[in-house]
Image 1 (cartoon, one colour):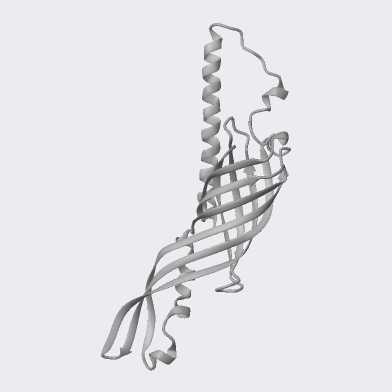
Image 2 (cartoon, rainbow, N blue to C red):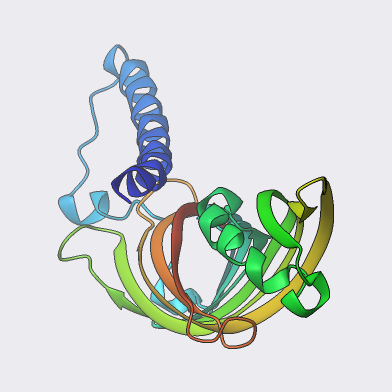
Amino acid sequence: MSFALFRYIIPLLFCIFIADQSFAQKRHKSNSFYKGRYKSVRVSKAKAKVVCPIFEHSKYPYHGIGVKLGDPFAVTYKFYATKNFAIAIDFGSAASGLYNKYHRDNFVNYSISDSILGSASISYLGHKVKSEWVTEGKLLYHHDASKVLNGLQWYIGAGWQLRQVDIEYEYFLEINSNENEIGKFDVNRFTMGPTGALGLEYAYFELPVSAFLEIEMFSDILEDPGWIRFQGGVGIRYVF
């Protein structure tokens, strides 16, 4: 779990670092130009704080589109209706590697029934996820956290997730001591359920972008009622 979180946090820090370096380089060039020709211009602290050109209270609504890295890896759209409320829609592919054990354990639910097998026995050999698509929509409540860090907000919300997975299972069938075979079969599964989300969003860049980190919880109500999965990731959106 710690490795997964580390893997998610690194891209977010990288995005913040790139934006900060871009701003620093522009500031350095500007200072170099004026140093030899003009006196430096001092800016008041109040004006210096106005860095982010987005999320001004009088200019809502905003739109944001970008990429989310994690589970799922997705294209993400966000509609910032007001200062406090937003709607987010993500579409992408699940991190199938994180679901290997779950898909393996489900083999017994999809394999040939005992009544058909008779005295034969079937056992799992492996599986391959051909596709695993995720679509979700969330209603989010935002709260300002600029007292902690300028440009920072935290948010909480709830929504609904749809999942479509296509898996190929490979099995070993032992008919008797002298006869056995290896075979394959496909499973195409659709399921859905509610999600809860908790996240941080940072937008104190010179460019109109917003970086975010979020954790989600999905509960299956269709194919595997009661199954709960924690998801999450980091991402960045262009805001306009």
